[in-house]
Image (cartoon, rainbow, N blue to C red; front, side):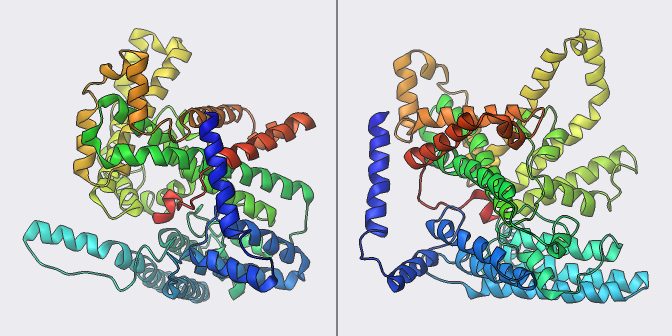
Length: 535
């Protein structure tokens, strides 16, 4: 263990010597270095962001109130410009698409708000949705659907969008935010924002532009009108939230990713126990990665005085699929419910229609995550889980009464949790696999040689070594996962921030330093993109 930590620290120090200390310091040299690093791709985990974010905050509170939103808009566009860079290659079309879509939504919302008649408003809304979601469909799905048509009917359609989905990062998120804004204005939920800077900032606010949370006008837009003053307590809370997010991303997600590369890349090579470890580890990694991003985003927004909506509430503590989706990616679930499920009829038009609506929503959710059959299957599985849960509600209640399981509430709750966790973890296999064949291969091999890896301690060590468990801080990873879920358990009664605030000063700061030391010693600093950034 100490040898691994020493090697990791040596790699980090070599990086600092090579990238930071190799040249004599000068203002121009430092600026050039910053620009070079930013052009490699800017993200929350890049050193450039950690250096420039304090400058953004300092100037934000220093500037006159009338200029603060404009300053944040400039920072958001600069962040997005460099976030879209890949390998030193910039993609100006990404920023152009974001700015054009934001400006279009701003103008159209004003027009919708100015028209009193219902029919013209709806026609304008339809035009806006066609433009917003049409861009998303064109960039992300034309090639996918062309391939399906080619396979189904023997065609030879060539559909390569002029815009790259990989370059237009965050497209799936800000198109939904823009569409939701137009719908809210048309419904009269919120008035159209007349100030272009505030509206454009709402649709491109840098903490949430790449991977959400998906903000609604009622969540964020009205906060552009507030006067945000510097408050030490608020800034401290934001920094704590960001530290916790970095711990999840750099220590848990990145170390797990190195192990998962082996298991999911060559499922034929590993036995059932190793593949099960990989499947369960991905369940944890995805949550640590995405919730870690959201923690950093919410913390950054909090430092600037903005309150972004929560995206997670202990999802792996859910005891049903419906409860899971009330806790996982909450802003997407809410968006799909309000703008697709309810307009389709929701739960008001009979059981068959309810089941059909549920399947439609989850298939749309699957496609939103990615243009691939694996995502379609993942969405269909969750739709099937939800439909079966609804259809078997009465039989399950009857079985509980007959077996008196409902009287043993802790045992009943445990079985509900175990079934839900197993269903979710099984579906994540399709979410992570590159192809359907890889997913089927992995699942089919789960029973093979499973017991052989558990026959002895030596066999167990060999199995874990085979997937790179010890080479990638495996023991530290398990401890970090335990810490994460222990902190989750503390949120059962009150928010984690409140629990931390009640701790004694010494204990609280010892925890901060422990997290920071764990990040520096065991974190992986290779700027791997956040998983949901590719959606």
